[in-house]
Length: 239
Image 1 (cartoon, helix red, strand yellow):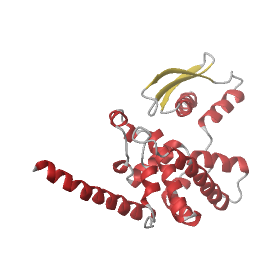
Image 2 (cartoon, rainbow, N blue to C red; image 1 turned 180 degrees about the vertical axis):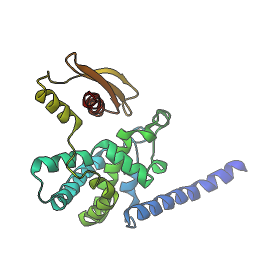
Image 3 (cartoon, rainbow, N blue to C red; image 1 turned 45 degrees about the horizontal axis):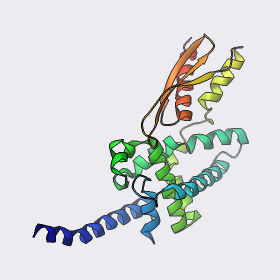
Image 4 (cartoon, rainbow, N blue to C red; image 1 turned 90 degrees about the horizontal axis):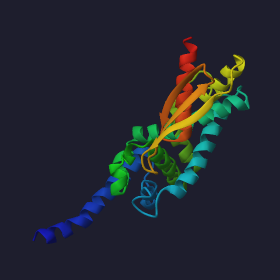
């Protein structure tokens, strides 16, 4: 009897989950999905299925870059290309996309394999950042560029105003500090790499000769280098 009841409930449970996802998409994007398929794929990690978010991430990354670039071009009409590029790079990082995904409540809808779940992929900046871009790709296919533009401007609104001036990347700032003070260029070295391939963790050390050094951590080599550069700048500025 128990087996019969369980089988009878499975289709109903599937419909409930699908309705829940459809409602979340409509609330999040302000648009009732015409086809849930691409959104489901955007939320599917490679550990769960071959039909995962990777292709949609490729598309969403370009759509996000275009929407942000267009917005910056309008919003900061007097800034030169270099400043706009720094703003763009700061707004489309994996960490920022992951934070947006968390703000929107993406995590409960992720489809992860058992090992990925155990490895903490649900809170990985790499995974959440990729999923956010994939969702943008799915939304673009479903609703078009105008709708995506409106969504991105709402989701990134507080972030685009976070800096009165275009932020300078910590690695560039450290490089400039070294040159201005007649020091050797910063040298970066990976001191540790741990975690599975889908959720790696890096520790990087940066040094300027024998003057000073600092370490930083991140879910990619670049993110760890950026964190290390920021930490070393903080040390140097206190001297």
